[in-house]
Image 1: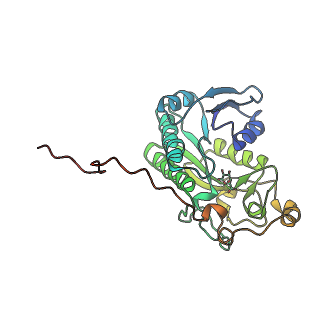
Image 2: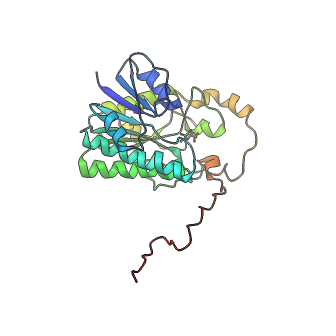
Image 3: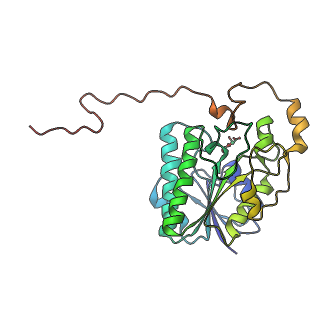
Length: 277
Ligand code: 15L
């Protein structure tokens, strides 16, 4: 039985995956927070923004599902440390520990500024809609580098929204059920010919904005379709923000106030060198 490390295991997606995959894999769950164990999984507390922690948790596993980090928009400092430094540490620790296979749950927010009127596939140019989306694009780019340079293997799953049922009109297009995301993750762990692939993490939704042919080529056969919930979801939908409604990323695409950074102390300019007298 393969040993799989799931980082960020205490979050929603991690919790669904651990339940769905408990009988198929030996799971090593890792998080900053405590969690309620599922089956015979092991738990390692870790902060992946520290390389020593990343090296410790990635030792001796067959594959990594790297969910750790912010799963929504957040302040730049937090995104930088958890999503960018944390992602680098996990991929680099995997390389040093000889772990070849990584599944990176990237996000619909890596391409959230595409309009809903458009159908996009895995080859479109990135269009992140947030600092969070940019951090997912960073993970995709880093995976591409590690695949080409070090021969590692990556499945990038641009996840829509994992939930037992779709929660609003936007999610009718991007919803994925827990059993469908578990199927995609299993493909990512088992498929013999993955080098660097991008797929969309959605169920077989009638209203999908994605052409998910790359996932189907790898053997994905989603079992669920959000249309079964459409009437109920649309009946309770309230009018939304007109800008958000244009874009696939929804409210992530609406401009927000970003506070100015604190001014630098006087006499200290970034990039300038002080001449010796
Ligand atoms: C995501 O990427 C997030 O991880 C999740 O929490 C949701 O916000 C989802 O996107 C979404 O767009 O619904």
